[in-house]
Amino acid sequence: MSHFLEELEELIKRLLEMAGLVESAVHESVLSLTERSESRAQRVLLDEARINQMEIEIDDQATGLLARYQPMATDLRLLTSIIKINNDLERMGDLAVNIVERSLSLIRQEPVKPLIDIPQMARLAESMVRRSLDAFVKRDADLARGVLLSDDTVDDLRDSIYQELIGFMQRDPSTITRALDLILVARNLERIADHATNIAEDVVFFVKGIDVRHHAETRGESAIGGPHR
Amino acid sequence: MSHFLEELEELIKRLLEMAGLVESAVHESVLSLTERSESRAQRVLLDEARINQMEIEIDDQATGLLARYQPMATDLRLLTSIIKINNDLERMGDLAVNIVERSLSLIRQEPVKPLIDIPQMARLAESMVRRSLDAFVKRDADLARGVLLSDDTVDDLRDSIYQELIGFMQRDPSTITRALDLILVARNLERIADHATNIAEDVVFFVKGIDVRHHAETRGESAIGGPHR
Image (tube, rainbow over all chains, first blue to last red; front, side, top):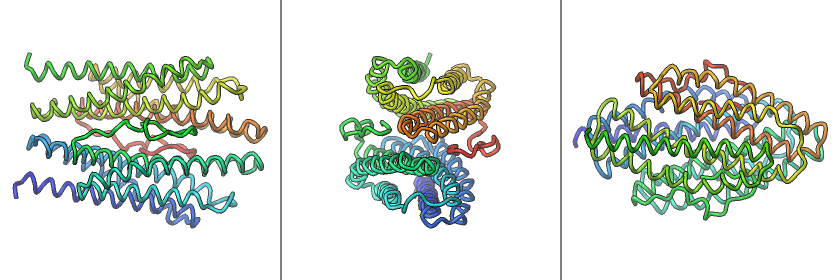
């Protein structure tokens, strides 16, 4: 095996290690809220520095490979995908930290309501992250396209979470700050799903050479706070 | 001048053209809210497709340059910076669209309050975008570092906007959905400032070869919903 392929394999291994850390941070951040667990929250905060450090290392390694081997065609597309996926993963790690911050505030207060929709949204977002990374590993464009389809369901869940929480705020103003915290948790989950969508788009581009970015317009955006791509 | 340098100059020109479109979208999105102008809002929505298209073209052009000329050292760093800045600009365009969506909902209702803090936050975010791009054009690391310093002020403004709007919600529940819309506008402005910070960090890295990412921890994050980097 050439030096380039060896180093590329090493790089992919590190990227997947980073992905494992980020997936676990997202999972723990939601559990910290549903189980009202401060220790889970602290674990996410501790892992943040490691995730940030890994992003820089992977970025350096990928840029170094570009510079030293000047790969062409598929290898070049693979390397630029790795750089982008690395960036998306790091931002997901940040979003997990945001969730933990809301969670630490929420678990010190009475619950506004039993949490059903948020865990459901979290499961979907986590499954999108897992499937987008699976699609990357298996170079499977169909699997990646499946992730893009889940995005509408995430938007629907977010809308129903917003509506329900706004109802709570209106009926009982003492719930306002807590309901707002839960809305922000939902928004962070939505952004995690968006990053999974970005990864899936990169995979389709990498595998097929077809650019599927910016087709959100045709997938039916919702009225409440839906981010455009 | 070599073909490479010619094409690189062309690419930078396109990136700055894209930056101009995005800056104008951000500016118009806030004016649509402060001037209650539906036509300004529509302009932002119309420009979105063009911004998205430009992002794809710039990305393709930059990747093509990498592949065809295999630049080393400074040129390689410049090209990877361009790819990242392009991505940050496109996301700012999305955030301007998010602001416009909130604005279109808000301008059809009675104002909750005179808008003072949000325009102030918008001015600061816009100035950060402008200065980060200036720093890129002039390859001026000091100018870029100045942008990083503004980030704390943005966080302070966001906190005071949140607190004031939560107060409105608590005193008069009929303001809840409108106040929530304004909170989401502030959050989008904060994320625009974050992208300007990313650009400034890229400029420092490009000019000095020093990585200043992930030093947010030392710049004093605030308690309310502050995204980590």
